[in-house]
Image (cartoon, rainbow, N blue to C red; front, side, top):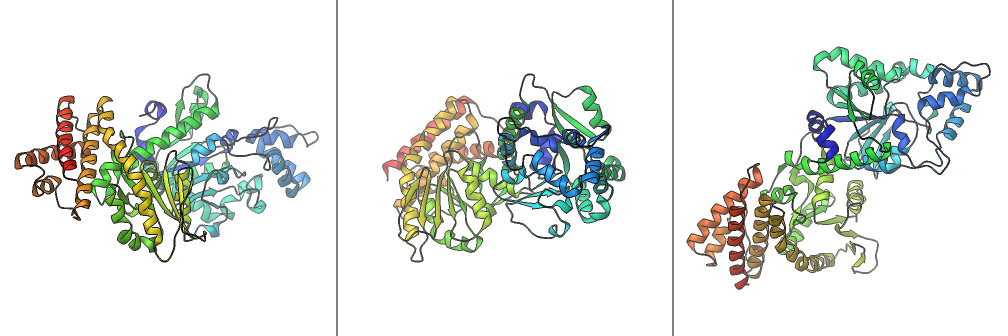
Length: 527
C-alpha cells in the first residue's frame, strides 16, 4: 500500500470509499489548486470579503459574508455577480493537476459550494445539478453528479452568496436540503478545501448529527500540516481530521499525489469485493502483481451484446485472450464507476463500439485513452472504406453491415497474439525473480491455458467451463495418468493462492513452474 494511504487514511474510510459510500464535499480552498496565468490568484472566501469591503466607504471589516452582503445592498446583486466573475478569474482559470487527479477518482456524487466551473472542466462526463427539478432526472451510469448546493455564476438567481440567501436557503431549497441530508446520512462525508463555516450547510450537518446521535457516520477532512487549533476547530464540529504531515511540500503536490495513490488503491481493491461470472476472469483481473494479463474488455452498447458474443468472443478466445463485459463483474453499492475504472485499468486490450450514440461507451473510451500503453480498437461508421488505420495505440475500423469488420478484428487480434504470448511466457519467471511466488504460479497457469487453447483451436475442439485442463491433456494423450493427477494437485494449489491470502515457498513455486513448462513443451510438440 502506498505512503499516504498506509500512513494517514483510517481503514473504515477506505472501506466506505471502496463500497461507494463516501461523499466528497468540495469547498473554496480546493480552487487554490487551479492553474492561472502568471500574476493571477484564486481568492479564498475571506479574500472575497476583503475585496468587496474595499468598495465600501467608512466600512469596518468583520467577516466576508457581511462585507459581500453590504456590497450587494449598496451596488445591486447584478453588479456583485459581475465582480465575482472577475475576481474568480472565470475566463482565465483552468483545472490544475490536483483537480485532474481528483476527477480520476470514480465518485458517483460530488458536492460543492463553489461558484466556479473547475470541477465540470475536470471530468469527461458529468452532470451538474443546480436546481431542485434536476434531482429527478436520471443521468448516464458513467456520469459523475456534481451537486452545486450554492449554485454557480451561470445561474445568478441560485447563488447563495449574501445573508438573505443563507437565511432563506432551507425555505427556498427544501428538496435540495432534504437530498443533501439524505446523502450525509447514508454516506461518509469527506471535506476537501472546506471550512464548514457556511451557516446553511452547518445547520443541515448539525441536524443530521443531533438526530442520529451515536448512529451517525463519521465525517472526515484532509489537512496538510494542520496545527492543533485547526484540528480542534473541526473536531468540535464533529469532523475527524486526517492530518497529512509532510514538511516543506506544496499544497498542490500533496493532494495531487494523494489522489493518484487513492485512485491506484481503489483500482487494485474494488474488484476484490466484486463477484465474477468466470473464475478465469477473476484470476486475471486480481493478479495485480503481474504486469500483463489476457483481458480484452468490450465497451459496447447493450443492444449489440448478443452479436459480439456470437461473432467476436470466440475469435478473442481463439487467440488466447479473455473477452469481458462490465456486466460479468457484479459490484455492490454505488461503485459502477469504480468498477469500470478498475477493469479498464487492468485490461490489456480494449474494444469500443462508437457506432452508436452511447454516452457510457464514449466515457469508457475517453477513460481508456488516458491510460498508458493500452491497445484500443475502435469501431465507428464515419469512413467510406473498410480499412484499419493506426493512431498511436488506437486502431480505428469502420463497422459495416456486411461484417467485414469481424475479419478486421480477427486480423488485429492475430497481429497482437504473437508478441503478447511471448510476453506472457516470460511473466512467470519475472515474477519468480521478484519473489512474487503466488503471482508467479497464477501466471504460469495462465500461460498453460493459452497453450491448451492453441492446441484445441488447431484440432477444432472447444473447451467447456466444466472441463479440467488435466482431463483435456490426458484425453489427448499429451500427459499420462500420473502427470494428470499431479497437474490437478498443482491446480488446487493455484486456486488456493488465487482465492486466499495463503503463501507458497520458493521451492514449491519452482517445482510447479518446472512441471508446467514440461507440460507446455509436450503440448507444443503436438501443435
